[in-house]
Length: 28
Image 1 (cartoon, one colour):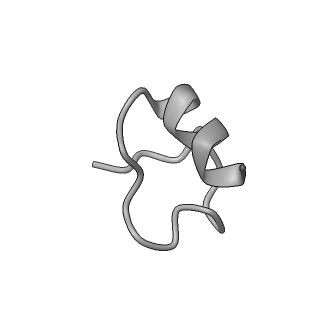
Image 2 (cartoon, rainbow, N blue to C red):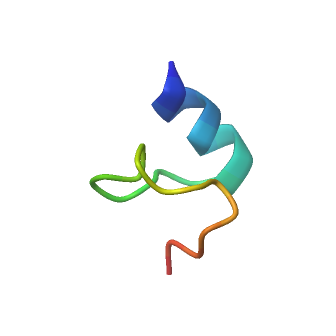
């Protein structure tokens, strides 16, 4: 669920360990 929310926030598939990083963090 957390990963799903992160995807919607970032608008793209978050990298590994993105669950520990804030949604506002630049994933690159």
